[in-house]
Length: 61
Image 1 (tube, helix red, strand yellow):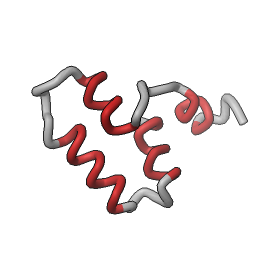
Image 2 (tube, rainbow, N blue to C red):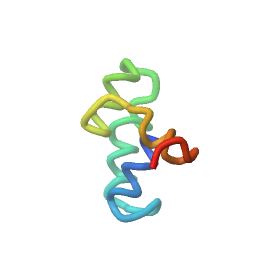
Image 3 (tube, rainbow, N blue to C red):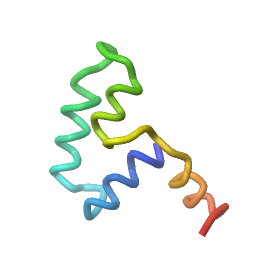
Image 4 (cartoon, one colour):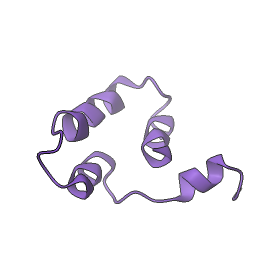
């Protein structure tokens, strides 16, 4: 997901260990035990958006 990857980029890169721990703690370890919106919001601090996807495809600057 472009929005989740943007979180890594904002934190300094794709291999940022703190962001990887957040992803594991809030999404991967929970699996299907909770609502995906709740998991993503816990990870990112907000609902996902389309801005990163549109930016990555060159549709917005």
